Image (tube, rainbow, N blue to C red; front, side, top):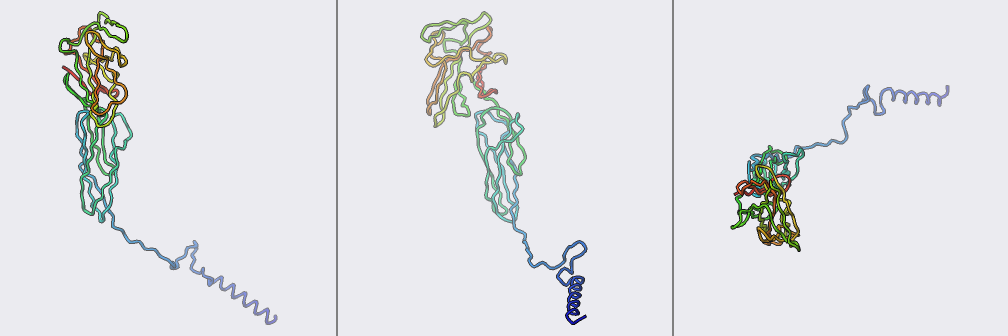
Length: 296
C-alpha cells in the first residue's frame, strides 16, 4: 500500500471515529433524541399587578306598580394590586323566558382598593315577574311589577307616557243601558239581547311626554264582570258619534299626538243584563297581561 492509500485510510478512520464519539455536535443526544444542552436564548416573565373585581349588594325593588320607574344599584369593588376598568352587563329574564336579555352595559374605572356604587333606572313595559343580575360576579335578584289599580275618574300613565283617565257613564247616566243610537252619516240603533246590556266607558288619553307618541287604541281596553272579560263591542272610525244615551265620538285615536295633545271618546261593551256599575272593572292591557284596572 502506498502513502496515498495510507492517508486515505487514516482519514476514513478519523471520520468514522468522529461519528462514533459524537464529535459532530450530537454527542449529548440520548436514546430518545432529547438534548440537555444550554439554550442560546431564554425568556423570563415577571408577574404583573392586576385588578380583582367584586360585585356586592345588587338591589332591585321586590315589588312595584306598572308605570313606576324602577331603580337598581350594586357596589363594585377592586381588591387587586392595580387599578382597572370593570366591564359588565346588567341583564333581565322574565318569568316565561329561559335566556337572559342585556339591558345595558356597565363600565367603571376603579383604583386599587376603591369601591363604587353603580345605579340605573328604567320603566318596565308590562306587568309580571322578572329576574335581574349584573354579570360578572353578582347574585340574581327578583322584582315583581304589578298591574296598576285606580278608581274611576283617576289617571294612570302608561310606560310609554300616555295619561289615561277612565269613567263610566255621565253625571246624569249610570253608564248601563240596553240600547244606543249612533250616527255615521245616518242614525242607527243597536239593541242588546234580553240577557245583555251595554256599558258605556269614556276614555280620555293625553300625551304626557315631550315627544310625539301614539295613544292606546280601543282594542287595548276591556271590561271584566266577576272576572269574565269582555272586549269592545262596537268600534268605529273617527267621525262617528253617539246620539243617545251619551253624546260625543267613539274613542278612536289616530296617528301620533304631540306633547300634551288630548283625545277622548266612548267605548261600548256588551255585558250581562244584571251588571251594576259596582261590578265593572275597566282594564287596559299593553299585551296579553292587564296593565291597569279602574273600579268604582
